[in-house]
Image 1 (cartoon, helix red, strand yellow):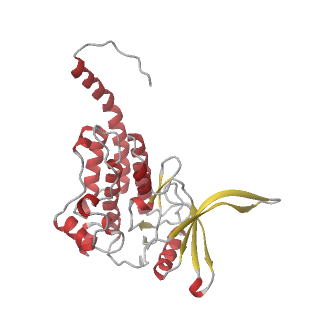
Image 2 (cartoon, one colour; image 1 turned 90 degrees about the horizontal axis):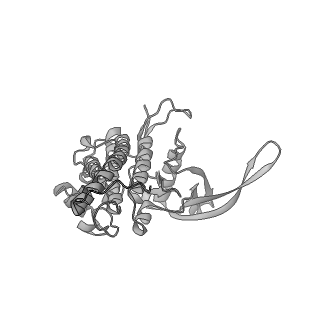
Image 3 (cartoon, one colour; image 1 turned 120 degrees about the horizontal axis):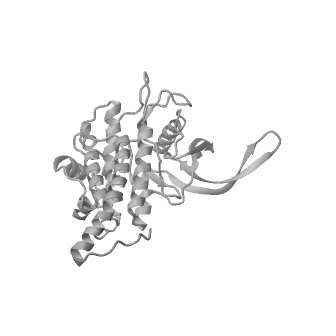
Length: 326
């Protein structure tokens, strides 16, 4: 269950120095948990945030936690940085993306997931364990003011530390729409890499959401839709998802016009390799980040040639070179 979210604007936070107290104005997000499920989520998210090495520019920044009240009236607070652009879901509902904006979001998002997945024994803050998100979706990707992404909501996340149990490894958790085939089937291999590959399936769906709202292709940009919304509506049951994803092996449609843009062609290939039915065939998050860099280069190299070709075909006239206005 998602906790209610609110904001506290400009609280006065004292920072002590040797001879004076300085007050800093900040803007934070407070997540308040009140029910039993939310208390479990709060504790897990608090534990994940406090792991070694969890400070990263593409992970939501944790500021603190607090318990208010007592017994049945207790409220559990998680305090994080606040990003006024909100979630990627909400942003895509209201905005279309340029090619450069798509690449910026995709690269920073995949970089954050790659870092979350990485086991780093030599981290300066101590051994950072690999972490699987388990509820990766566009609603849990927040956008900063410059449109770089940061990953949020670690209430279902699992950490993998040598010699320690990863915690509750119940397989069928997360948001149905984003569940990988093996999760829907209840056929998960309870090993670290298996959980990381589940995240990668969901990343493929979020990349599709980015592509569906990008204006780079020579074609109309559809209204925002969630993955599989076109196929099974806004409130699919578990059985609906099993039928579409597992039995029919369907995925959201990759539009034909996307194949006419050099960068989007590579993005479509990347998406398909992320949401592959066979978990072992899926890309890693680090590989997706590298692909996005390659996409940017490919599009920048081919775009001028495509423009010249079109002009030649339409006019059939040799024009003198025109000075660039860029």
